[in-house]
Length: 197
Image (cartoon, rainbow, N blue to C red; front, side):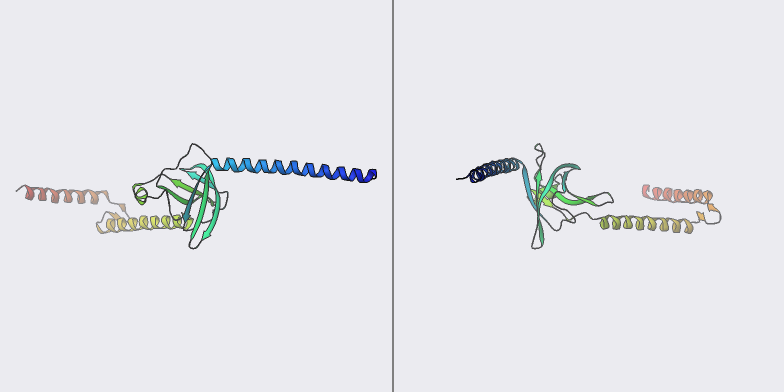
């Protein structure tokens, strides 16, 4: 055997040895990661939809980040969601409520978990899933609120105009208010006297 063939043979042996060392290192790291992952607490829930959540999105309990989304999968008309709790001191109480929420106008999404209520405890579920909170829902709520405020203002101005308390040209007539209060007081006193008799 020539020296060149001998060197090639030793190079192959060295390659095989380094390859086996590398395989053992990778296997050791994977075993360690799997062992550490088993120590983490995981929960599985089904949501109607996840409204922009992705794998890796934060999981929050009362606004404090406690974990992350590990897996999302569509199953029929529901979305399967698996999340991991990285804070080992946190144990979610039975009947907790989970929903998807957005933070800020940028719309970053997170899975928000709230403490149980009497209704959620009555369901007997570990975690009760609710529909996501959407920006459009919040805007429609604001629209409803402003509509009711507008209605109150219209009714108040109509009442003021009918009682003669408010005239656009003169402004608020405090004497008319005082006269109306005196008349209302007189009526109340008459009613009290009739009740006493």
